[in-house]
Every structure is written in structure tokens, then in C-alpha cells.
Amino acid sequence: MNLRTTGFLLRPVVLIVALVHLVLGVLGFFFLPEANQAGENTLWIFSATGMLDVIRTVLGVLGLVAVIKPSAIPAYCWMAFVAFAGLTAFGVLSAGTDLSGDAVNLNWADNTLHALSSLAALLVGIAATRVSRRKQSKTRENV
Image (tube, rainbow, N blue to C red; front, side, top):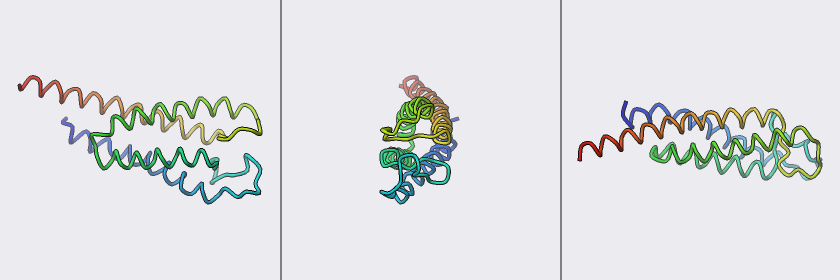
């Protein structure tokens, strides 16, 4: 399996993760009325806070860039894995408490989404890194 074929197989996974977070991030900006209390800003079952919407939008845009340029998929996946794993860890700790000063305000639906996104990014990152290492070792053998 060459890099082009693997990139073709990995790109849809990255595209789905990127689009989900981009849509949630962009739509979240429209569900931030000033009159709502913290924790009442939701988009379907997901939280919609300014900081979380910025994080989701940035990760979504970077994912779309990685889909356009497949050589960026491993870097995006490792970055997304770290970001989503951090959001999951913070969210699990945050959802267990009910502090009013929480700027991100994650709930269990967000934690599940971030954990699944982190797992997908980890698996795609491992696969993409293995393929790029194989390609590098083949080019060294041919020299």
C-alpha cells in the first residue's frame, strides 16, 4: 500500500472529524446569547461557549487544510490527538464539578465527542506515520 492509496483511505476520516468540529464551532457562535447563564448555551446536545467554539473552528479548518494537502495529515492527527485528549481530560474533571467560573463548560456529550475524535486522530496518526516511514525507508534503499 503506497502513500497515495493510504492518504486516500485516511482522508475521509480526517475530513469527517474536521467537518464535525468546524460545523459545531461555526454554529456555536450563533448560540451565544448574552442573557444565558453559563451552561445553558447549547447546540443540540453539545456545549457552545466562545472558547470552545474557537478551538473547534481552528481544529476544523486545520483538518480541512490537512485533507487538501495529504502530507500534512500525520502532523494534524498528532496535534488533534493532543488537543482532543486534553479537552477530554479537562472535560471529565470539569463535568464532575459545577463551577460557575468555567470558561469552557464541557458536558458529557462534548467529552464523548472529544474522546472519539482523539481516538480517531490517534489511529490515523499512527497509520499515516507508519506509511511515511515505509516510504522514507524505500527511498533510502533505492539510493
